[in-house]
Length: 256
Image 1: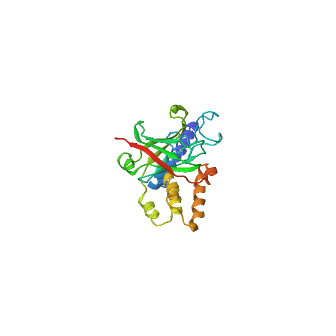
Image 2: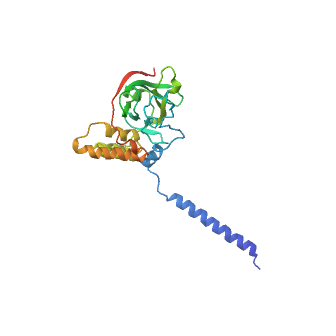
Image 3: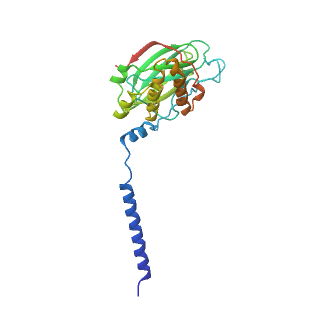
């Protein structure tokens, strides 16, 4: 007579073996992830690093340097993502609220070991969007690719009490663009370039290319629409119509 229990065990083992084989085959024939897809996935990672794009400064009536208590200093960055850039002289963009009087801003760039790489003091007037440029010599000589760098922008409300500074902070990371994308960038207009940069995860470059030149009257509407679309994609639609304002560099220093 057959051993019923043994027969059942043999059937179970065969079924289990077949399932394992099918699983191995499915993994073997799965489409491999391309280098471009891998770069994009890495570009969109937050690397476990927090950002703070809206200031958490004091809003007391007597010691806030912002006119409207509901307005914030805001970094134009994704909320939880390390900003990737490809440019040798990247720009970072910030919304400056209406101030009671002109104030000095301090921009600081540090590496992951908290060593100072670059520091700049600036002034600006009016309410709107200002840019901060990281000099090309800093980017070329000090910034390593695929390494995270921590930046801060502080509005100095009282130089004798820096604890009252209004501060935003985030991260940036220098990465290379693949050859195919670079070739395509050379053949399209600024709006298409911004879209390509955005799709590949290069946030700072996407904004920079739209703010790089004053568009012609014909292009202005399209450029503004793309700018608004990019800011809306990271939850900053309310700042899309803010005007651009100039900033003046007072003093800067680079790591020796």
